[in-house]
Image (cartoon, rainbow, N blue to C red; front, side, top):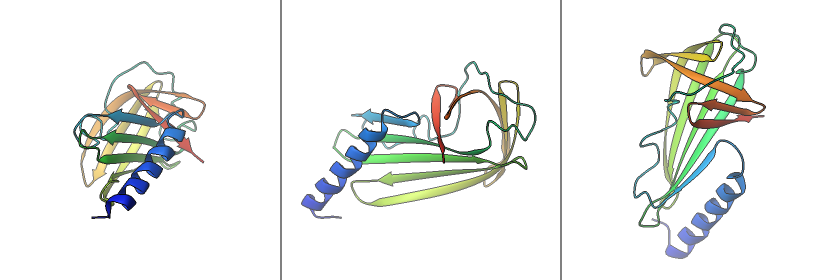
Length: 159
């Protein structure tokens, strides 16, 4: 474990960086929840909602590229946790989902990567997981500029 002074400096820097990004889509700060990030959301793209996505098959040009969502959680004990979910939607209909969870206070992290196929039609996004999870799920989505909304969750486009 880092010395208390170093821990405070790292935590302050992490909070300042997240606060600067908090005005941007794809960043959510949760305080005093007492838990680690990813409990109810975990970047899973679960949810419903209206959508106006451009759709049109597996090569929907509006979805192509990388999108990210960051959750910063400050636990009741003051520990800071971050969960970052990045989706990469590719032209060939494949998708890569990477979720990294950090305990910023202790300097440890864990990453899981999932491989999937995707299609979009109208306002519906269908994800078929291949590995390490399997299964298919369909979500409502919309895109407004550089913001992808899936249910109540927003993802910012990475350039």
